Length: 101
Image 1 (cartoon, rainbow, N blue to C red):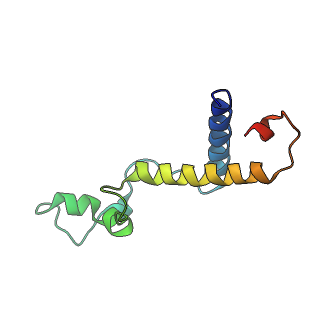
Image 2: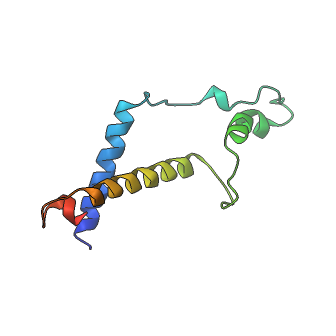
Image 3: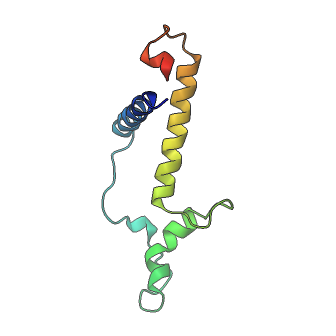
């Protein structure tokens, strides 16, 4: 099991990198869509700066907090699950890396 974990992580990283390059380009920096322009920056800066994010990303009931890292983690777990399901369905030769996964 210990030997297959690095392989599994490598496959997941490759799948994540491949899909990231094939989808929309990565955004960097401050996303102005997260700003709540209906709030006054002088009165409630937290709502002003984060209101858009909070409205678009409500905290799921199973979590006490929710942020970008949770979104990334959930996306990676979903991709890993898909990758493992595909590997399980494949009729890989015995002893091959795909069969071990």
